[in-house]
Structures are given as C-alpha cells and as structure tokens.
Picture 1: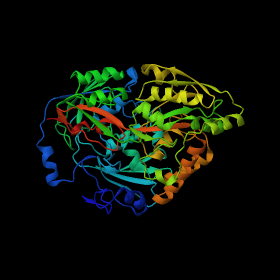
Picture 2: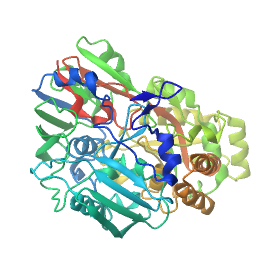
Picture 3: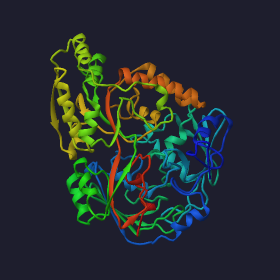
Picture 4: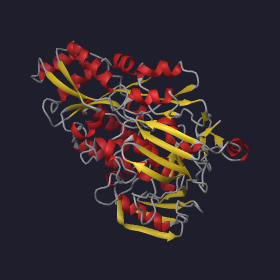
Length: 528
C-alpha cells in the first residue's frame, strides 16, 4: 500500500480511483484487496488474527418494510434490515472503503476494453459458497442473468448490460457486453446490484459467499445467520449474528440500554445524549451522503410549475431544520444529491438560503398566492417528522399553509410514498449517476419526483459513456444545475449516521458510509 502526494487516497496495485476512471480507455486492470476496510497485509493483519472468535452479536435495525422483507438480493425493497442481512450473506465484486473509494472485493480483476462497452471480470480463486462448492464463472453468468430478469429491482440499475452477450472465458473469467459504453460499472457493482448469487439460487434457502451463512428468517422480525468458517476474506469473529427489525426508535434504544442488543443502527436525535451518557455504550458517528428530502411530484399541481417548486425550496430554513430535527449532526443540503461523489464540487452551486420574499414573488407569478399544501410525513428515518414540522413553521412566513399528515412507519411505503404529491423520503449514500438512474431520469427505477427532462436524460447518457473523468464531471455538473434549478427535491440535509454499540464489542469504526454501523460489515466485529 502507498499514499498519494496528498497523503489521503489509498492505492492498490499502483492504481487510484482516479486512475480507474481515467484509465479505462487504456485497458487498465484494477487489482483488489480482501475487504473494503482491510489493511495491506503483513504485520497489520496480526491483531485481527488474534481476535477472539465466539459469541452472538445481536443488532437492532429500523427503517424496515415489515412482512415484505426478503433475502433475495435481486428483488428486495432497499430496507435497511434487509441490506444488513444481504451484506453478511453475499459478497459484491467491488466495495467502498472508508473514504468512499471503490476497491475490488470478490473480483480479482475488472478490466474494460478501449471503449468501455465490454468489461472482463475475473473472480478470486478458491472462493467457497456456503454449500461447499467453489464459485466459478458459470455462477457469475447466472447471477448477472438473474439480475436482468423481469420484476427484479436490479434490472433498472444495470443499464445497457446486454443479457444475450455474456461470455465465459474460463473457469474464473467472464466478459460482459454493454449496449453502449458504461464507464461507472465498478461503482455500480459496489452496491446491492453487485451481490453475487450462484447458479440455481433459491431465495428461501439463500446460499452466498459472504462471511455468514443462512439459518433462519422471519420477514419483518428477525434474521439469524451463523459464522462461515471457510470465508475467504476478513473474519468473521462472532459465531452467530441475529438481526432484528425494530422500527420503533424508542424500543430500539431501550433494547440496547437493557442489554438485549449489542448494537443498533440509527439512534434518534432525542436519544443521543442518553446514549452518550450511558456507561458501557459507545456512539458511532459517520459522514454520509444520505438524503433527507421533501419530494414534490413535478407532474402534479401545483408542483408542475417550476416557480412553485423553487418557492417551496426558498421557504425552508435549512440550518434550523438541521439543528432542530437532527441536532445539527450532518451537513446542509442544497437540493442536489451525491455529496460524496468525486464530481460534486465541480457544479459550483451556491448554497440555497431562505428567502421568503422571493418565495412569495414566485408564488404570485404562478398564481398561487395563499397556497395551501398537505405534506405527508413519517418516522421511517430519523429527523423526517421533526424536519417536516420545522418546514411547516417556515412556510407560514411565506404565507403558505402546510398541513402535516403523519403516517405510521409500518405502512408508509405501501400506502403513501410516491402516491401523493408532497411527501418525505430518505435516500442512501450513492454516486451521483447511480442515484440519477434510480430517481430522476425519465426512465428512473423509482421516479419519486416524476421529473422528465430530455436534456437531463441526454447528459446522463453522455456522462456514463465518458471515460475521461474531467469530461464526465463537466456533464454531471450540468445535470446537477438542472436538479438545482428545476428538480423536485428539497434536500435539506445530509445527516450523519449516529449508531450505538456496547463496549463489549470491537470492530466498528467511522467511515464515509452508505449504510449504518460501518456499512453493516459485521465480519469485522468481535467481542472483547
């Protein structure tokens, strides 16, 4: 391992993330490491080898979808309890490290051709599936074909991949062909789209290559996994992992305080001081690119008028929302997602500040003076209800009446989300182009704002085909400006992950995270 001149970016095999993005046209080969946060070998690994093996790690996770929970990585809803289980059961071809840089994981090599419309993947040798078989190229082809089946949640996030042109080159190597150049492929593989399932995969008895093997699953309640002793990567150290879906924030904290759990994801703001003041508990704070937006349906009145959307954005006192809803633990939002993306600062967008006079002027121009809105909110993620309450107060100063409708977390995503014109949501940390494909393109997988802009779509197609990082960032900056000026999100904050765990366990660490509790990498955790 070595550091770059700035002393920050990790390099493996002599290649940085910038090299990966810029050097794709030259056919660069990316060399991997055993895990997303692993050391570089040698003496650094000695403490991990000596760590105690044993015990049952009990973890409480919220933001679940109840009975619709699944352990199928290609058909899951995105709920956090499901993701916690999937990260433990399955490996991805690439992962994000502590700095949110892409590193290889299950893939040993990942190589584009000169135009990035073909990618060659070589998996690590001697990777054992939980049924004792060795993972091979046939499994890799079967996994990608499954991802593209009708009805999967992964199909829309594997853009341009041609299911008819997947070719096995040898027992560990596969070549994938795309309908057009697709430079961000390594980034896509680091998310749930990259989970690899074997040929003949059965979601009722899921078999993967992850650090933990399946034992039992009760949707919406509990997943029980056990240590897989032949795991190829780091750890695992605990013998059993029990993941409980606990959507009620108070119940989740109380279970930790009473010793029923060793760790919980997402401590509610009003309980942060309680956790910090409790002997034997540790608070874990991680920077994220997670979103806290208010969502406007851009096809539904009054939000079909861009002047109304901009007026709503100008009503918000973002600093007050961040302070009162999240105890100031995070960063101000500016209506554009992807703050950890390498291209984010290139857009040069000024921080949007509250301006009620300008908001009133825009509403007059739109013929919407005395506007009355109904905002649907829920505690599906920390700060959403409190942020909605602050916004409703902010809106009064602009002459707008915002009535809140609080929906139970257990039914919000089935009864309300995307079915009303003005509602809350939350989003995970993602690279910009990936989130655009999910949420803001006209062909988006989950088009929350129903945004439809031909120029925006065209810029996206050009950006994902751009091998040169500078050119791609220029295109992304144009997309971000369209989001900023015309989009349907009022993104008021990027909250930190505030998680908690018992001091009887070790292995959790702050990261630039896309998931709580050190990205749910429980293979790193052991009892002291």
